[in-house]
Image (tube, rainbow, N blue to C red):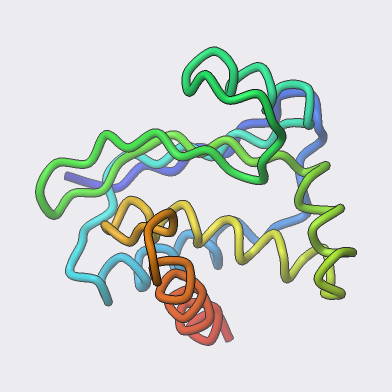
Length: 140
């Protein structure tokens, strides 16, 4: 199955991304985890839309940078990833990094979830961060 990337703007503006380069990077990250890319949709939105999605589908009442809906089967990863550009921007300021670097980290964070890496349990956040860092090095 050929992979299929979609990049959608839901009222937040489309970030300036070299989509071909990022798609190639995502394929390589997936491959490094023994996975193949299927349909992957990135929806860039603002905090209000993210809060709406969070409340509607997860019963959470807070802002977040990314929500990943996982439709993967076996080695084929597939999913919808909502990214709040507002939260990406505020997180970049908080951790004193550039907006572009934080956006790349969030983009790959969703893919890593689809590859089976979690970040909610004990010790999992550190594993996710290490995997994000490895993936970011692959973008060069």
